[in-house]
Length: 371
Figure 1: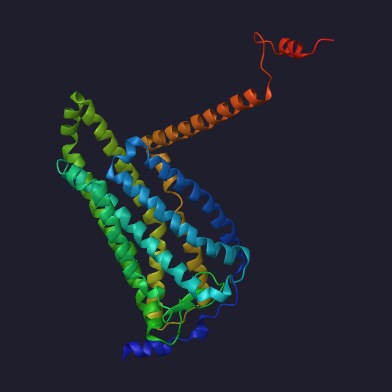
Figure 2: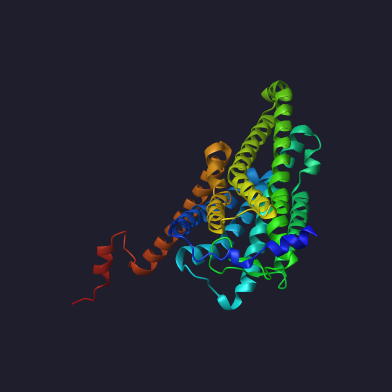
């Protein structure tokens, strides 16, 4: 009975927002443009760095590589918002807008889910290596990372599959930030589910569970390290190989903690706002739709930083990551220098005339016909 009442209370006209305010247009135009510049550049650099010899041998680096790819997908899908709200200030591809809505909203939710749970398994990976070091080589493998990633993809697809249904999901307010897409029928039970129940499900699976697991894992890792710190230092003093492994482990922990902190700062505000908005809807309180749309849009830009800033925080916090990135840059420089050198040699061979005894002028005189 409550469900029926809630669906009747919902009025589609209450969601009519005339246009995006100027500050939101400017925020999407310049804010997202800046985030895209940092994000795509940083994620590509992260992928290249984690593929370096020292890092790619670890399962943690493999997870970070997948994380960078997932983050790039989120930013790629966000380009639609950038164009629609920040540039054209009107809906794009209206003839296929319903299909575009389903693709955009599904991919956003799906990539958020994937990125969050990849971070969870980064924490689990480091926890296993810390608490069960003798079994880590058996459990923390690239093969298991692939299996885990496939499981995340399957669960994430299943969880967000309702957004792919043409009967349930489509356009809501084309061109309006964060509310361009929604329930295809505003009077349906699905509309009640989408506005009142889906935010709790999304926050639960994308924020609360991942945050809890990350915190518990990080705390237990810290406690285990403190207990075994003196013993590890004593053994490592006499074994350089173990010393290198300990350094690599420490640097991976730093990368993990920095990524988790970014996730907390950028994800929690959006989740809290989603819960407050859903509670307001359930309580049937007076809602200022313009304020909800504007606040959600601002927090969405903040959320986008989570998918653009990992590389730069990793560079600031991890010396090993910086060193590997510098090595990659040097390799690129050598390759570009080598190609330039080859091109110069080819040009000299094809353009400059051959010399006699190393003297080009003598060669020219030698080639002149007798007078």
